[in-house]
Amino acid sequence: MPGKLTVMKVYLCFSFAPNPLKGAQVENSQAKPPSGGWGQKAIKLKSQCTKLTISGLFVLFGLLLSLPLLAAKVDTLDVPSPSMNRTLRAAVVLPDRYRKAKKLPFPVLYLLHGGSGNFRDWLTKTPDKMLLHRLADQYNIIIVTPDGDPTSYYFDSPLVKTSQFETFISKELIEKIDNSYRTVRDKKGRVIAGLSMGGHGAMFIASRHPELYAAVGSMSGVMNINTATWKVAADFAKSRADNLARLLGPPKDGDSPYPGYTMVTLVDKLKANNLPLNLDIGVDDFLINGNRDLHQQLMANQTPHDYTERPGAHTWEYWENSLPYHLLFFSKILKANQVIIP
Image 1: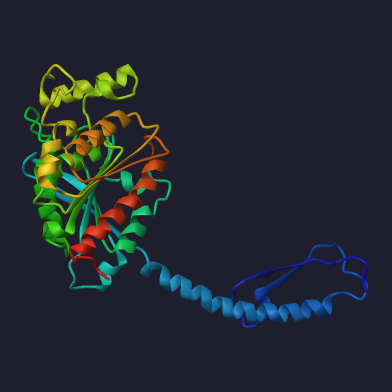
Image 2 (image 1 turned 90 degrees about the vertical axis):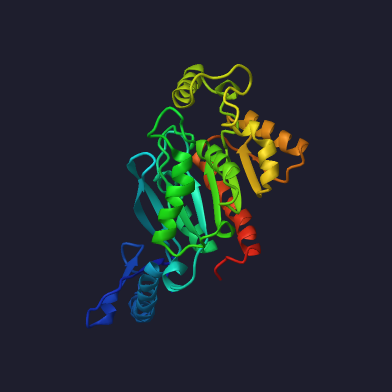
């Protein structure tokens, strides 16, 4: 009996070689085998490895064949905008079920990006690059991420004709998606959400078009576009204030320089619309004051809404964590509307 324990490592290698024993390699952790050798043990081990190799081969083939069938598909769509006389782009995440259920209409989530972003942000900037794919498959929902320009704030500018994003999102984009895919062509199967500037956009557009959406969500949204309320550097606040003046004209005096364009001035409209609202923000986010203000106003006028503060800041790590909660929120409403795909 050898005086030391011999450790053997087995590597399985899948091969179509005529001799299946070539599919196993045996390595001894010692330079020399002990007296008496472990050759017989190695032969037995090779035989066992051969069996593992053959069974493993079938498992591998099964996995490879199944991979393309278990993932959502992403289209990139050109969306003409007659109101802006230009064409914008949108990514469309189609759940795997869409390919299989060829006659069923699917609900749609319109998911808006934030400031300085574009239509690819939600697919490329989350730490988990498959987040939207997984959520689309989990809830059998089409997710559309449209371009909203870097600093449009998703309203129709009375001054800049190439920045008409309320019309683009609420009319031109919906028409293009409904005509290109099998969708639920009714508010009961359509929801909207966004982050930061996109959170403002989702809330603003839904407040003005409650007939189009079943529910709305905001993640770290700009609930007050008065940059004086943001916890940011003075130069950044000024750059955003100058941009708003370019789009909307000179600001009015007071805490709400653009009444009617900012959510903290639209709480009565939110109450009248009676849409399900879901808002969240990180406790270290520079936009938290505006979110707390809106929440308090909604509480005061008794508007039902979900409001959550979580650990986190204005980051993609936060939004990656936040989005699944919004999908869960929306799924309950879509289920109640009987548009969920089994």
